[in-house]
Length: 297
Image 1: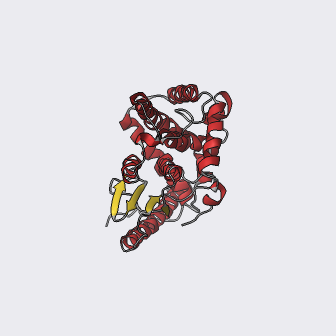
Image 2: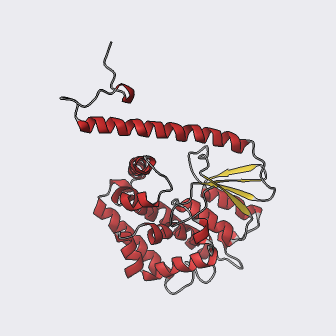
Image 3: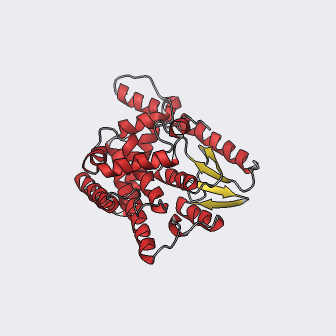
């Protein structure tokens, strides 16, 4: 019979079987056990939610667990929840929900209708609640619509990736401190996320750049956004819009979850108007920020 090298058949440390390999197998076994528990709990949660009746005319927002210093470590979850608050849309949150059929978070339910992805959720909400294009009230010019679209693209297709790299690859210790997990998951999740982020960045194309090139892209993006914001209250003027939700979703990650990083130094230093902007957005739409981050379910 062939020798089995699985966790359960692991021999004790001896010559030719170093403590390092033993430790790795133990960690792997613990990770497998934790992953199995998470998988079973997710299956149960999915079954439970399928049989749950939610209040009518209330948006049900499915998203990740709260982090220690921010409502969500996902810029897209924070974007969508900020949009709901910006337009006073009645909603409730389901934390640590199963991923959507696209393998993404967040997603929403509304009166038996299910919408996946933050962008399509906002489109649906805009139509359902008769919100002006891009969330801007009054007369909106084609140029303003185009500018809003351009800001969202810059934030979500460029800046987002460099911030994700900063978080999950370059400064994983700071990120680990933010995670709402205990035990082995606090180490396994960052390790898994680093691999996912690097793979997705490479597929996107931005991941083919070097570390220094990525930070150069980040700095140029932040400079452009800082110049565009100027002395305005919001990114396109004195009224908040969808682009502000997108921008806040990413900048808030830098402001409150990446202490001591180059990203934080840029936002709180050279581009201080972006830091003031984040504080303004938080005070306006998240007056209960401190309470929200303590929510467990």
